[in-house]
Length: 325
Image 1 (cartoon, rainbow, N blue to C red):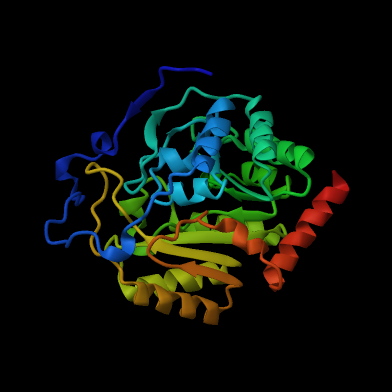
Image 2: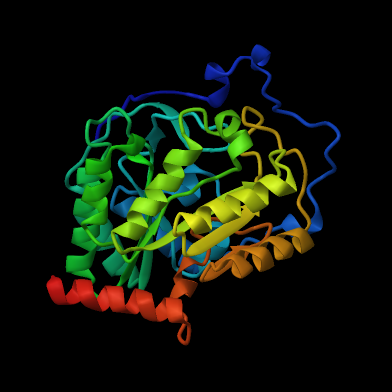
């Protein structure tokens, strides 16, 4: 695995004169509903050993997810492929930005090995953006989905993908590998997109979801609150995602990874998250998780809970891909 990649923090591309707010002295201390208790039992060490033993990365570590202790304590993790250095510099994200050097076609088999050893019934896989590659990393993406399916045919596979700069051939390479759930995060409202995700595009993200739905996949997306968005913009984003064909929605509180990242503008009360959940369900989403600590892959395996029409759809997708493999 290559070492010595060039990295830098978000501040190096966004100078103090860029109008970006990184501190908010008027914000009150983090409220009690955001406090997390970290489990200490051995399952966390087991997950860490399996992940690191297979030379893999997790978004749990790279993005400093507040739920890492809980998820690892349940024996689950969100695996991150194509290295841990991203070519983009989103102001909210804790993953390092720089010039990646990793491109490892043996990685898909190591991911499959980790899934098998952890005996996962459901796995979430994500990646950094690889705008440095002509295929955007989509070849490794497809190979990873296929490797996990071949090794663990009964495991549900959810993928959280980048937009591949809107290149249809690269998106289709992932769609054709038939993950059971295809996620791509909108992250924020349209009015804040260039502020929060300077190399992304709101409409391109919606198109990514729409194309995945047209390909016959169960689709998922997520947005963060607390970056300065207005309520009307949040409702619009929810509607836009549903109109694009999004099936599953996650809504969570933005939390600043470091002082070099965008500041939290407000703490959103749990009651407001509940209002957005009710609205999204009324718009026709098949599943909505909305709360301060919700993240895009948090408790993602609950999509398989018996009795729901969505769970049946995912199980049918697993059965279909298993019969083809």
